[in-house]
Image (cartoon, rainbow, N blue to C red; front, top):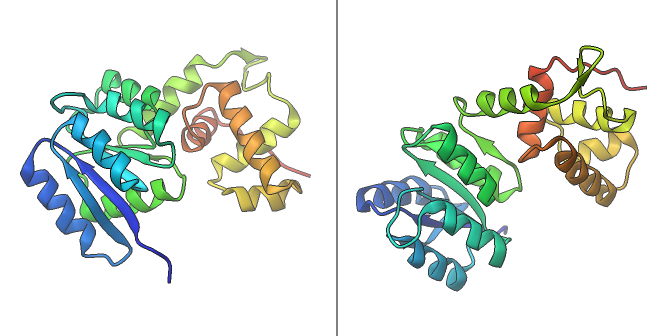
Length: 219
């Protein structure tokens, strides 16, 4: 039997922590292993329990959420940090993604959305709230250099093929089959592509390609 996904909740409001625990623990595949009311406690509990996912508020005493995420990314990279915050402005979004957040949801998200986000984060996927994702993609597309009126014109044919597959939401296994590459090669090429285009994650890269109107036809 597959073990439950271990989740840490870090939020300074007890009612929020209680609500999240109730939402998550009604599912057998999710287990809340700890609750932290401040940033330092979040890091201590994460070190102790080694959760798969930490749900992190950005406004907390001791250390704010962005600093917690950065510390966990540095010292506990196996823990994926999912932001759940009342802030949806560009500054907070940018700080969270730069720190290494694996997802960004705003408070008010439905319980089903939170459950899906936790599972997606645990699976290594990036999660952005519907109202957040397009803003990230537009900012990325606008910042890309163009040549001949075509966005991403400086990418190689292989990179364009890979970017199109990301735009289609393909996972690494699908990309491996489509491009006839070993899974390890796919992981390396995806990572290199994200660095090349300045994307924080594969979901944002795919959204940027769709926003820019990238359409490719692979042989």
